[in-house]
Image (cartoon, rainbow, N blue to C red; front, side, top):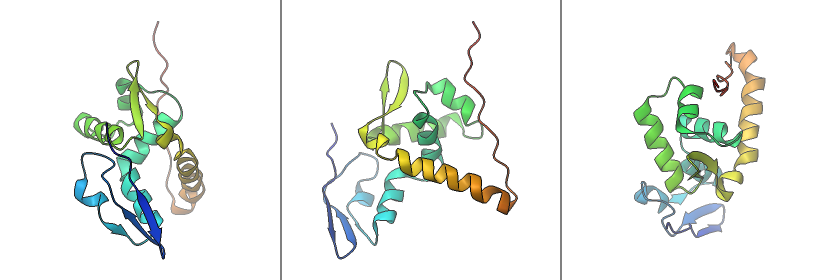
Amino acid sequence: MYARPSIVATNQMVRCSTLPFGHTPARMKRTYGCAVELALDVLGGKWRTVILARIKEGAQRYADLRRSVPHMSEKMLTQRLAELVDAGLIQRKNGAYVLTSRGESARNVLQALHAWGERVGPELGARVQAAPSKARVA
């Protein structure tokens, strides 16, 4: 399996001494200027946090995620899911993706991002469109 990072914080510097996942070995061995920088590096960019936010609401099959994030290509979704699995944030159980304990620990952060986006959206003139429901045809 993958090694958990050994995080050492001294004088507000955060240092990861071991590799927590396979795709970014050089990135996780560097020193971070603050914990927010480290958190953003682990959570990733736009698509990884969007996927996590969807899975946070409940187990999601690949097709459910594909429907709920229509602007992301299949290749991008596949790559980002693999990165999230490698980072130990999600796992696949019974054909669906679910949060791991590490992913669950990001639940409050994801909820705070959601709430802030809802608050600031109207100020910026942005509209948030709800994701399609995952209702199945019987």
